[in-house]
Length: 215
Image 1 (cartoon, rainbow, N blue to C red):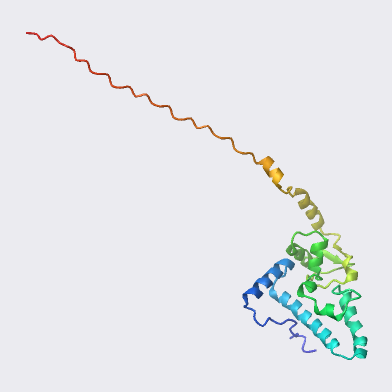
Image 2: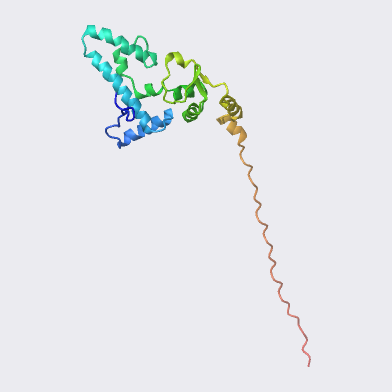
């Protein structure tokens, strides 16, 4: 068990954390599920590797021992919604980290209660606005079971439902091509008048007055 002051680490770093493709994939997953740090993603990968290791060890056992221990693993996974009741060990080996992250309370709240982003759902969970059954749960990484999924709701004193309804009513209508063509009219062509030609009068010819010569 170990000293409670120094709990065992429940996650492992990837072997090549500076790989560019791996970093881009991790950042995409962080944004999709609203994770705070990569450590939460590494926890999901570590838990997934533990489950898959159990499935591989069961496949290597004799049929009698496997028939005794396999239902225990399948029942625990079906309880949290990772596999169905009639799944096999091959389905367990095909699980991904996204399947585990989809069972987090934060993800369930985002899909069920109408939040725009998973980060909004995380904020609501942390500040105690979400209840599972009759108790408040403020842990975004809480794994929701299949039985508890239908009992996820807002706390009675929470004002977030009214705020969400208000934002829905104030949301402008999406602009389509037809409405855009109606609203945006072609600007009228400005008629630029050509500047009037200045009439330059030719200088009058100086008429030489024939003056009579006076003697």
